[in-house]
Image (cartoon, rainbow, N blue to C red):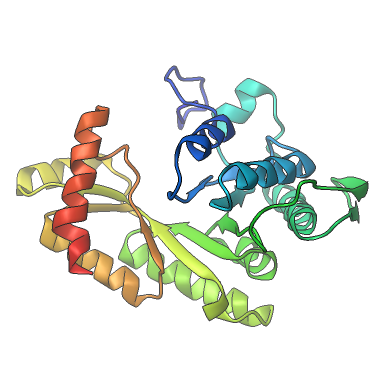
Length: 265
């Protein structure tokens, strides 16, 4: 459902992630697909692993499994799913990602923890990819260490200054767990607003999140992307919800991004 800072239930059409991913996998041949990110609160890790393996089979090896600890309060309250607080939430996630990673890469998995306990659990058929990439979306120190230990890809939000801080945090996490920074695919997304006039830019700045919005002309966005690449990011993600109110407008915006911005890289 749509997020709301006051934790109340909001109306709005939001398709269920894994149902949609499966449909996209079935009707495309080249696009990579994935979740950004699927909270381990809503699906038991054994179910999530089997879901990912199945969709990797449907897509012939095009899935990236994005996972996170969960964050959206109103969604968890409405559906009666326990989000947990702070340390307990991250503890549960750490157990979940270990189970998911093991099931996607081994014939059988045993695990005994505080939150999950499984015995001789299979994941058949196994994924097409060896390994199916697991991505974690995070910016915090402990979650970054978990990512460095168990994931193949790291994702974060942020414009250049925010991303710079998070890159430093993740690089330190890699050092602490003896993981080569260069072995991990790194992606970042921001809310991109393609606008030219200064009045509109100022209006958007008053309402858009300061730590994750990139607002301005093509030239400004090209400069920002260049700086993000310079920080070591392998992938820049453009969410569609800031690019127009209807599907055609968003499609037109993507075409503009492709022809007027991305061709500089």
